[in-house]
Length: 104
Image 1 (cartoon, one colour):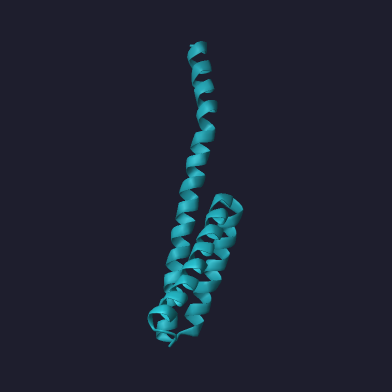
Image 2 (image 1 turned 90 degrees about the vertical axis):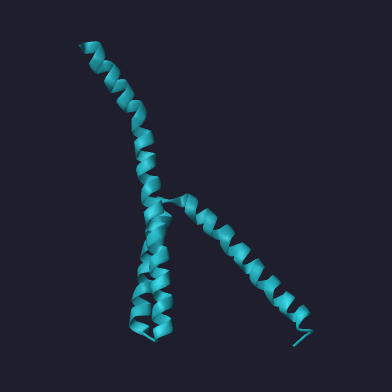
């Protein structure tokens, strides 16, 4: 009986970090989904001309992003890379438009 309890305790201690990591990954994913939702809501508010709704949505995005940055540092690194790629694509698009429109 004592051996069974000891074995269960050892396996429980060994599996605890994996359970904690899975919980953190799930929470990070959930925060990312919430950020995306509020960014979408801010876009809708802008389309409808509702400045109060838009500002509230952007404030919520900022709060969620701050919380995610504290709990999920791996996402901050990904965002920096994605922002750089988006900036590069924007510059390339402007140059391509200038080329194909012959300077217009």
